[in-house]
Length: 157
Figure 1 (cartoon, helix red, strand yellow):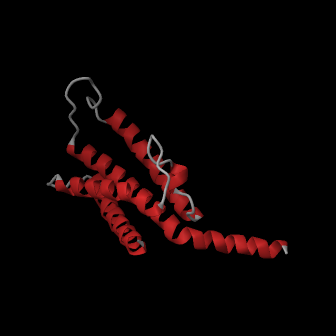
Figure 2: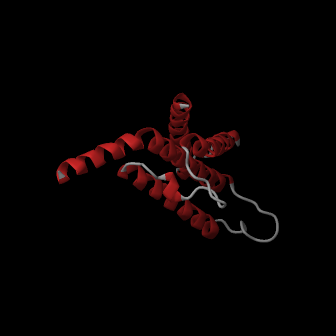
Figure 3: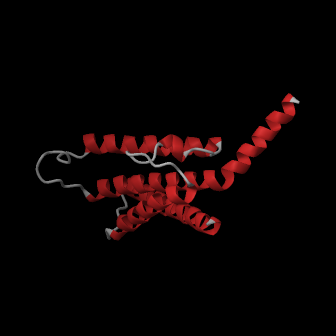
């Protein structure tokens, strides 16, 4: 089980780097010519995000995985990274709502290529960070918490 967690942790890190690269290129206006550049990372992010709670033992509620469960056992830097990317995805969605006219009417939805790459790469990047956080908290969080609690116990005695 530990080897599956480590494999998915490495896969999440590689997927994060790839999605972040696609996202930065799309922000610079260099839209890839093929749709597989955002379909691949999105499918990988979805599969890894579905597998991560089961491998990490995260509690899944009726509405999905809460952000408190995602960052459970994570160090401070990883919690802040998770919060940053969650807020960034919300900001990208607001940008999409105001920037791209005709995206949210009742009729046909048409999304320009650049906006599609920005949105899908941001969402897949956030999913990869969430996957990495869940698995990192499970693999290294218990040791991290044990060290801090033993230091606190040493200070009180």
